Structures are given as C-alpha cells and as structure tokens.
Image (cartoon, rainbow over all chains, first blue to last red; front, top):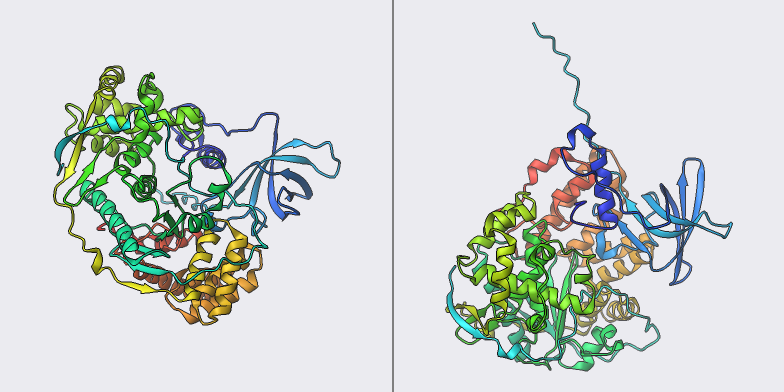
Length: 141
Length: 454
C-alpha cells in the first residue's frame, strides 16, 4: 500500500508498517510518511468539526489534556481509513468524524485563536489489535 | 485466445485535432442551484436486460439498444477473462437521457466548462455506480469513455492493484471494442493513438512507474501520450510477435498479484525493457494494427428485455439518488422531497431522504427514514444497513444485541445478493466479511469466506 498509493493512504500504510517490529520488516528502504513542506504534525482525537461556510472549516482536536483548534481553508488534502463504516460515498469531513483519531499537518498560525492552518487532515480508525502471543509456559523435560 | 485476427487500418486516427472530453469520475461537487424549480419531468422508462438496468426519457427502442450494447461489452470481458467476476457489489444504473438538455440537467458541471461536451461518463462508487449515455449522440465510439470506465470497474473487483499503465491500457484497449451486427472487434485504435505520432514515446521504464501523482497522469499533453502509449503497450503485449495472445500478459499479471515487484515481473515475462522499447517504437509506427474478432457474439434480442414505465415518484427518486451520489445536493433534495410528497409509500424515496439527513448530520431523522424505507420495501438492503449501523446495537456488548446485529448483517448480505442478482459475495461494505472486520470479530471470518466460484 505504501509503495502504491500516496497521500493519507500512503501515510496510514507507513504507520501500520512501522508498527511491525523492526527485525520482522525484512529488507528494503525505510518507508516514510509524506509530509507537506514547512508543516508540523500533531495527532489526537477529533472533539468537533465545524464548517461555517463552503470555504473553510474548524477542527478541535483533543490531545491529552489539551484542546487544539485548527483552521482550514479549502481545498487541502484530506483522507480517511477505508474501514470507516459509511465509506467514501457518504464521507464528509464536516460530519460524523467526532471521536476518530486525526493526524493534522499544519502551518503555525499568525492568528492566536488557532494552533495552526490546516495543510492536511487524515482521519483514522483504531484497527483491532491481534492479541499478543501467549508466552509458552510449558516446561520441557 | 478465442479470437480470429484481422488487420485494422488506423488511418482514421491520424490527423485528428479534437479529442472527446476527458474522462471524469465526476466527483467534483457542483455549484448550488437550490432555488431553481424542479425541472418538469415526465415519468422515465426502465429497461432490464440480463445484467443492466437502463432508465431513459427517450424512446423504448433506444433504451433497449443501450442495454444491448452494455451486454455486448460485458460479453467481451466474459469472453476474454472467463475467470473474472463481472458483477460489482455496487450496482450499475445506466441513465440514458434523450437529448443534450436532459444530459445538462444530469451533469451541469460539464456545461459550465468550455470545450466539447461529453456523450457519456461513468461515476464510480462503493454502493452505487452510474453511467450516463446520451441518446442524441449515436455514432461509432460514442460510448467508449463509458466502456473504458466500465472496464476499470471490472478490473478493480478482480485485482487488488494494477500498475496505472496496465489499468489504463486495458481499459483503453477493451473500452474501444467495436460492435458490429455479426462480430465484435477488439483492439481497434484509441483516438489517443494520434498523440503518439511524431513524438518520442515515454521510456517503458518510466511508463511502468507512472502513478496518480505523476505529471504523465495530470499534464494535459502528457496524459494523452500516456493513455495512447498504455493502449499501444497492451496492444503490443497482446498481438505483438511472440506474445501468444493474452498468455504472456496474464503471466505477468499473475506475478504481480502474487506480489512480485513489477519491474522484475515485467523482465521475467517480456525480457529486457530496452529491447522491448525498440520493438514498441516500430510497432506504434505501423500503418495498421491487428484486431481481434469475436465471430460469434452472444445472441441478444433486445426486444426481449422487459420494459416498464416508472411512476413519477419512482422517476424523481431515481434522479434524486443519482444527484445525491453525484454530490449535487440541491438537485437531490428537490427530487427526493418531491418523490416523498408524490408517493409517501415509496420506500426508495424514504431511503434517499435518509441519506440526505445523514449527510446533514441529522442521524436520528436519518435512522427514522431508513427504518420507514425498510418497512415499506424489505428489499432495500442499504436502508437495513444504515438503520442497523445507526442504532445503539452496534455499540453494545450484550450477547442479545450482538446476536441481533449478526442477524441483521446476514440479512443485509442476503438481500444484497438477491438484489444484485449475483451468486458472488460482494466486496462492498455490506459484506459480512467487512462488517465483521469492522467489529473486530475475527473469529467469524472463517464462516463467511467469499464464494470464489463466480
């Protein structure tokens, strides 16, 4: 996926890849996320999104104890996990995204009301984790 | 390869200065026309062929012809790829407007831009797909853009991934199929072939790596060369000397699907790319191209396709649904509201109203509409799916709720299979496989393996 796609799909695949222990990843060049120039990255859980008009949106992200507010002017790159249940036919970055994990690429804002100006917004679902293999407690004789 | 061969002289493709409007998946939101009154419509007709549904405000004969041509296109793919799944989980609805005025109402975005207006276009989706083909532009090659996209749909339900040159090359190759009364011609030159004349080809090593971000896929001039060359390479790898029809191309694709790196797979099957480059250069400058012929196309009597007149509310609902999936929300709202008003007992109208509410973030209203839709018409699997997913039961860990959830999902898949007239498990999100994945119910995966016999 990471080699074949770009944007948020690429980045999500890279994140999955990086979850694999390094010694199990095999040979090859390391995979890197595609980060827009001059941007910073943060992530958290979406508290709210507001789309006051057709041109812009405001995203409030919960990051630990902090609430970070970002302002975005369309168009900017956005994407979402394919596992979001209502899928691409009905996905709308202004609705139904509360609680999703979001990766925000932003440029610091001159406006003190905002933590930054959105350059890219990626919504991801937490994927089910495979249970860790149980330690072998059998004793050999 | 079950094909006879003939030579197709391609003089027709030389010297053309105009090309059809670029293909599009039409996902660009259209601007608002919320205050315009609902266009006056008369009820449309519906033609049901074996695998396609055509809605039209044109003549019954023309609508039947469109259905037959799509059946023929499908027959080409069935002939060439006997092991392929041909039915997508997202049903395809073909809209056949009688004239430019109707087409403009369906796809106003194309009429806001300068240049040639499309004779047809295709809109991909996860839940529904639409094709628009105008009845007032009947000529050879009129619908090739639509067939090109239809080929993509079939390719994408059979392969997890194809390199862009192969995806576009195959779509261009088969999308240009020509239908004659007693035979079907495969491999006729694409009109984009003209762009290869007098220009250097893209090096094959570069062509193999072109992706959605490449300038070869975006720059107005380069993209035409890319499409032309992708077509030419697929043509050469099918009909070129020593290519054994589709045998080698199939070998190459099998390696790709097994995870072999593309360049390695390419060299393994076709040999050195520098050598192939020389052969391709010579090949594209031939004055004639080999074309495959299916001598015995399936006998289709379009007069046997059932036809019925839709009610006014059904017409409004179908057009509303199309506009909803096309992101023409003001138009969708007008049609759907009128449909509910005209026939409050029409389940499909309520389903569409549910989607409008869902898009507006009015989840409670949406759930009510989906519930009402399913009560009125228990074949509406999308209503049952959305009604289920919007209910609290999805967030409950109680065994009774989980059992109920599983029962609903099973019904959804069963309804979907029945409605799409397909024996195959679908890859849409209405499949138990995906739904189980969504819930993390890994243990149930093995119970619902896809049927690979279709």
